[in-house]
Image (cartoon, rainbow, N blue to C red; front, side):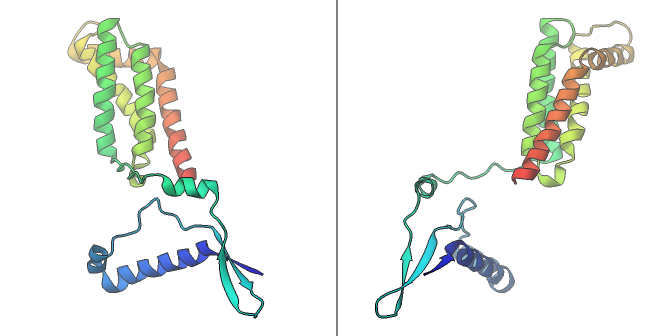
Length: 200
């Protein structure tokens, strides 16, 4: 009895078809023959070749497991599109800035609401960044933190004086009073990127 893995044959066929599509037929073939969905993976069901009484080989496919049947019955969900560093910066500044302003209006300075939104936004942006902009997962949290603190200083300043003195003092106070928020947001964003690198 000999056992052949169908996944190897399917993988060879997928690679051969992709090469034919890209090198020979090009975009015309891609319009006529849609690509295989991203979630479709080659089956690993073993294909067994048995010899019958007459010495002639015949094929027998082992029954699919429960996990394979459940995976095949799941509806296909298209993956979310990755965002760029610029898009992540804009989304983070708007979200964290609004939380900082609301927090400053409720009580002087920045508090728990700002810290929670800042950390959560840093992790979510890191999970959605494209790989070409993966560096922004570590660079964005400090910049967003400073920008949000400066925005809160314009709406509800803690110190008095000129605009430059008031803004710089409030930003420095936010960094010195809440370094744990800045540290956690940056470290968790870096951990999210490292997790994606291992999984994807």
